[in-house]
Image (tube, rainbow, N blue to C red; front, side, top):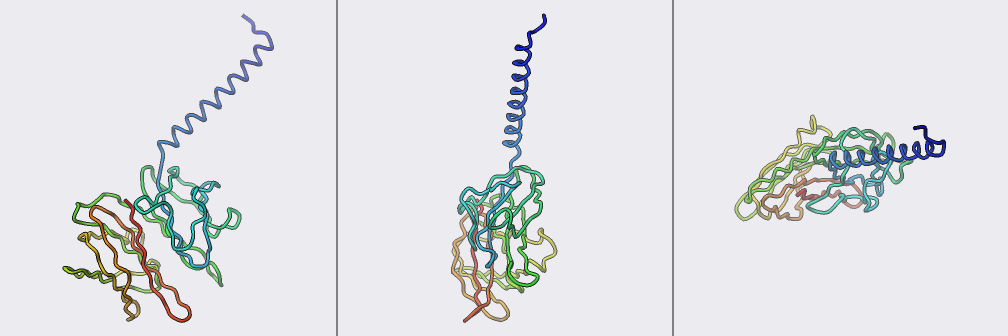
Length: 239
């Protein structure tokens, strides 16, 4: 049976609408099954607050990321993104990004990205370190800790409590050979006092309670300015 012209037009419009609906549904289904997870920490002292742009869209609904802070909340610092290779920018706006490149993430994997270094001055530029987070929890008497040294030289880190004294050597991230150099260590769960030696100067830092089964990134950074050089630490609990 031959359709009238008006019916043909309606059929074409309906077919196009169905095609768009089908593609949109499949896109959403694929996106939902193709997730990666990304934590971002801003350690650049002069980059200002950083927006996180993923394929041109702002990934963090909480707004720009201030200096010395991390996305999300303690125990879940991750933003959800689509796995694969995507354009990634960090900056005050998408058109004035300090960092502009591609990021590759595998489905179901968790990552921590650290934006560091100065952006003001000759030959200065925002740099980034991205690490895969292994969220396999240790047993209830242990914590997993990864030490990250964003200072300009090697650090000696000494952890003490009433029962133990633990010492670690942490190299500056720019002198470490590869991201897989930054490994986790298992430490007995307890409250520890931190002392860090940098260039023969010892810094006593705030204590940190390491909870059983929990996983941490602990990073150190220093700044030079009047009247003193300072060294600080901050911990990010990943689970």
